[in-house]
Image (tube, rainbow, N blue to C red; front, side, top):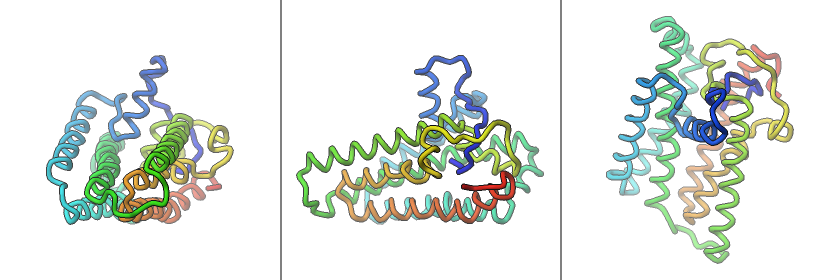
Length: 246
């Protein structure tokens, strides 16, 4: 998801069929990379499955849903900023070695990716229909559906272009430029941050379909927070390593 228009290893199976490549891409964006060693993939899948089950079974009240959202915000946005600002990635690499540290970070980040989306879904479940929209339900659902699929489509397209390693912040984690060329085609020809900008409109679309003003507030908080992360962590890295962030 890094703003860098830098194509890393696409990590989608090389000679895999387009269908399998797309499945691997969507799975990776959801938190589970299928191109990793089996043990790593299975452990990540286990924690994602446990998160899904626990969330569905126990996040059933507004207070618990709010706590879930707050924890996820603290872990992904605030925690991620502090992780890089205090150079904890350097300490992790020194303690475990580059590859083990990267595998550990990548697996944890995958679980966090899933929980970020799942926390919003559970929040919307207990905060649905909290605002009367001045449009028929069918129109709201259609508009929300179009926005959602356009958003996810652009984000998937952008991820395909830059590669899954960039999506998981590999360059940033290793604090160095990767191999490849800058990407200026596709959505990057129009948007500077297609993953962070239009790519996160799906959260607002979900809140719209749920007719949830509280859900929209959470979506807005998440959306603003990723730009805070970008401005405070990614952009300085881009300027230092690539010479530009625009």
